[in-house]
Length: 253
Image 1 (tube, rainbow, N blue to C red):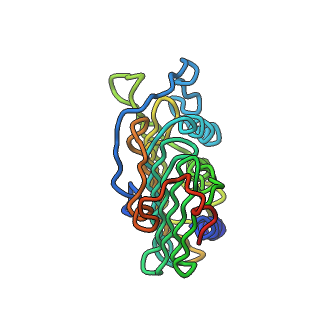
Image 2: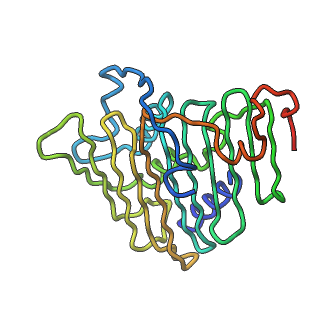
């Protein structure tokens, strides 16, 4: 049901809890992009007139696993709006920020492979620097791939470029909610998918009849393969000129 899905998303976001599209203005410079085989570039999840949502979610995970990128997510439910931004250079070098609008809650995480820095406004402004970094998968909740699989598990139309461009993105659209979302009215989902399976954008909106409230959700990837992460201002402000290897930073509050 729509209500059940919405409750799950709320739980996940508060458990994992800038402007949409970037935790902080970042230095964007070319970085090496892993070469892909022909098999990797193929996307069997999207055929001429159908989509296998589970295979597409798996392809999306593969396409982002060894790439740098900027990810923005926005979720709006009856309780309010949450904005999440994530800037990733690699699995252990990233910057994460989440904010619940008008709820006095902000959390920021910066990891540089050697140390993990956290600022959590909800926890009375707690600051932490620890030598136990967390992989990016540890903060990316909900996982966009799970949302791709859930929202696109319905009758999806495929809009391809007219010139039959093998390297161009395709657009996916649907207006029928997945069976698990019933009862939901005015359902609309649209996604842009690259040939390698990376879902560059996903937008969803519908009316949740069980909660009598609108639901909207958006994810967007940019600067794929062209993103580096630098030490953010809030870390510099808190710890000054201290280096990441300074022992006094270990497990500090």
